[in-house]
Length: 264
Image (tube, rainbow, N blue to C red):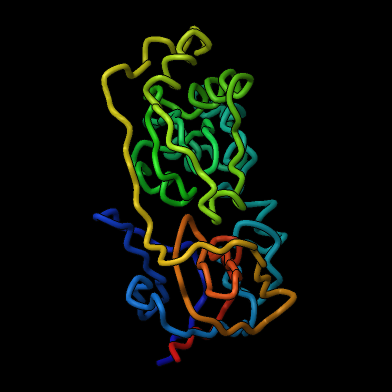
């Protein structure tokens, strides 16, 4: 069976184990059903997720021109502390930036390979944790805008990492930690502007991923360099497909790639 379309990040649903879906324009595929099956991925061409043109992808699924022009790729996306909509100041499109920035945001701890601090919109919980391959996570603060979340993250990352070791995450080299205790350690380092939003009563969320076998050594699949791959799917974690030969494929890292996906 063959599916064809432009890759976007996998959609997820949290049940006893995370359910993963590849969603194309006219079809979708539940990847959990393909565990232990042989599949192939064939790169056909690029397609910018914004303009739709066949132009080489630069970052985040966008071509170079779109990445440098559209509000969905503004610098405040990756650096929330640069958000300015709460001051009525425009970066690229103030109306868009107000919708995105002036809504509840969560600063959280997630444990994928090590404990890290991160920021996401409240509506993205627990999707954000799933995308990062976190087997456990907990909220620290819930603030009313992205700027407050950003300055809180900046303050806390002096005391805890803000990066995930994706290799450890994919080889399951992880440790379970008491995230309530880890959160308490950071309480005094929250900026004064965000202290009133500290969450003290919730428990950590645990997440189980559909993985039959974790690789011992990892080989990354880059469709830009190797446009065809065939292998047996052994697991899905974060935004990665894990194959029997140790190959891992970052679906989100290939947004904007049009592929032919075959179930063999």
